[in-house]
Image 1 (cartoon, rainbow, N blue to C red):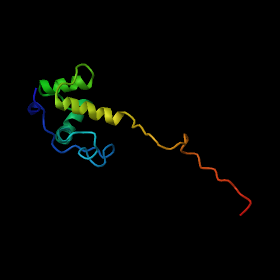
Image 2: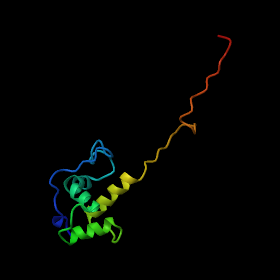
Image 3: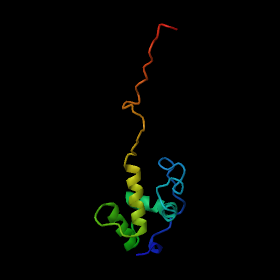
Image 4: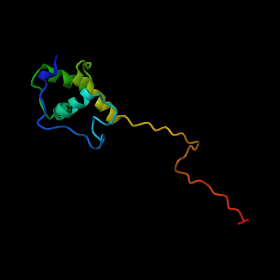
Length: 114
């Protein structure tokens, strides 16, 4: 299966809510994956949501992959599944601080010597 059979989107796909600096600059996608998301993302999103019907075998296989029926084996399918994983999985935050509760205000000692 080649990416040639997958329909190109009418306009570019951007996800400013999850990737405000763009797919190229977020550090999660390769250049090829970022370009695939930009060029094919609207159609991939519409196919996954059921708003667009599949026109060929590759698009039907993409729908089956998104539904969990089949395994992703093309770059478009792998890229979309990676995108879905990134937007649905909460980001982990690691702190180098010794404080466990970051909302707690630091306590100051009141010294009567001043």
